[in-house]
Amino acid sequence: MSGHSHWAGIKHRKGINDAKRASIFTKFGRLITIAAREGGANPDFNFKLKLAIEQARSVNMPRNNVERAIKRGTGELKDEAEIQEIMYEAYGPGNVAMLIKAATDNKNRTLGEIKNVLAKAGGKLVSAGSVNFLFKKMGVIDIGPSAGNMHDMELKAINAGAEDTSFAEGSLLVYCLPEKLGELKEKLEREDLGIISAGLSFVPLQRVRIDEKDKASYENLLEKLDEQEDIQEIFDNL
Image (cartoon, rainbow, N blue to C red; front, top):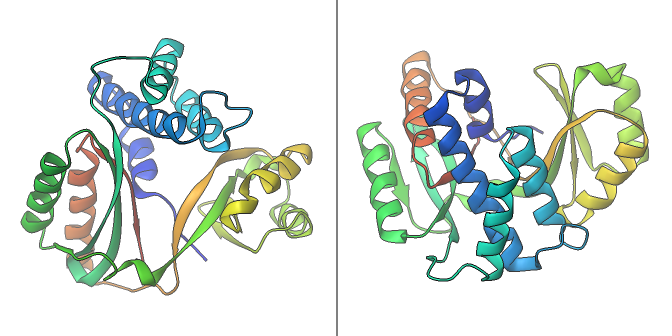
């Protein structure tokens, strides 16, 4: 299996300047807001919120920003537009299937921006259900190389209840059923395995290959989508 969030990868490659940092804080703030609205303000009883806060802390998001995002989700802040989470389906250059997750306070604006970026890059938005069936929703835990021997870690992950594993860029990716993510993460933390990140992902059932020209166009598309503040994550079958 494979299936990283492209936005996360681009974020680290590009580095974080002041403008980029502000955009990242907005992205994570919306993620926290949605999680708090769905499951409440206490991360001890809201695993989605706990993950969102952990991700925000990984990019040094200030505590005040985190608290404000939680209050926005619970309705404590008045006159704030509601943030909605939307999944768009698309095809990019080389017929790469894409799931584009957005968190927005203005659906019409976000839809227009995504359509515009896709059109300029040779991609297109498609109707709901046209791409989703090519992916499987899974919990994914990324374990860094510093945690020890990769194959030993893989065995520990399988014994802890992992559905599958794969190696990517020096990391061990551990897959599980979405509802088992919290339980598996706790077990691997007790094994002191050096978890880099954990979250829900859409893993492609099959992957496609594209030529160098389409690959360059696709990388450019990812960069342009990454610049859109409303876009949270991008999953594909490349």
